[in-house]
Length: 100
Image (cartoon, rainbow, N blue to C red; front, side, top):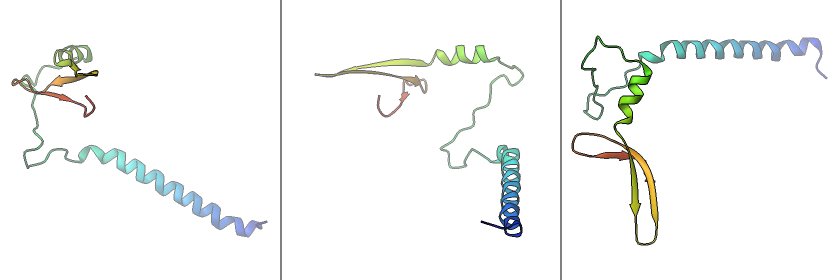
């Protein structure tokens, strides 16, 4: 059994570790938005809103996004499968998950 003097060090280290961890989490979440998500190599394209002054509510955003969602049905010789995806561009390219 630990004596009172022997309990001080583990408790102190635990408190210091907890404080340092909380400070690290605080700093991380306050500055995480400063990270740049775009790259210069052309793989990521930043798309600006055509009408920057117009604010859209969530219902409008969802309604506009639903226009580009498609259902895919594939029929093989012995199996049928279905999934969903979204229209990627004006050429008709559709993006889906790998299992679709």
